[in-house]
Length: 426
Ligand SMILES: *Cc1c(COP(=O)(O)O)cnc(C)c1O
Image (cartoon, rainbow, N blue to C red; front, side, top):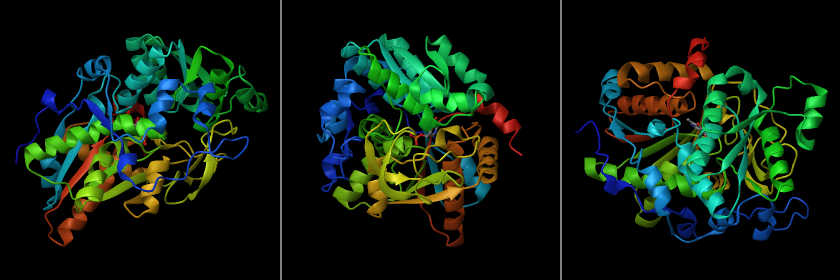
């Protein structure tokens, strides 16, 4: 078995894959927060660019990737698909482990995939500024970078706890021309009420989203951008799985189990959905496993119901697994997984029994990260280490029954800017 699939430029797909075309029954629709009636697409125009809304509601199976976006992708895509033979040897298991490595993107994670597409669409619609939130800073960096490529400014509301703990990410956003605000801030109605209670309020993704949405709604040249959860974001991330399908074919393997960490669900869905299609349409026997932190267990500890995407209640109601819009998870190192909800499409597949989920404590994911670093030589993002921990557990299960299975997981990002978290891990 070769250690790497090639990064043949032909593997970069020219179209995104939309799982909704193959689902049959769709998840319950988003609701207007004021009327609680199914949302009219035009209700979204106050906050999202029109061309983005068109992709959000589309049920077309394939959606073309515009050539300027393809050109931007080609700088770092196709990303590597690697056979983790050294990890397999270390675990002494018959299971073969493969990973798709999204950490080679310019800002170090899969988030650039949707950031580039969203910045391009906003620019086409004449939008000058995209507002957004960021927790650990991965999403804010990706959007600031994408904005610098397509001539759109990013205004990023950064959760105060991370703003103070992770200056590296803030500096990166500012270098790309992004404007970074500490959240909760005194500059919005949504932020002010938390700020006045406590100027050192640590913030949360839910509050930061409220601030970014409010500002977008009040300014006609501004729109809001979300880095996960929405159908269109999952659509953009499908390029991960479309490439992986071809790379697996090159290596002559079929994955039996696909694993990803889940914050809002986008990197996991991106790798999985083209393979979910294979399961639905070609009866391929593939299992899917979503991994979340024990302290923010949206799927394993949440409820499937309508809830807001933000804390204040400005966003549409989405039918999803959620811990409640007011849930504030404790500050763990995997900041990108601290979100109360789960993408409606991922939630739908969990309900249908196609995706299963599991939660891990922080000490376990750091142990997995160290094993991975020592065997495969890559420092993973603490978020991605959740997927590694599950891949290791599954490979050890396979060893018990001496079964040769193929495990494929998404290594959603590198951990170079999380290095201080590794120092504080114990
Ligand atoms: C943001 C982030 C995640 C979680 O977001 P999803 O939308 O669930 O993919 C996972 N890994 C990394 C490296 C991230 O930056």
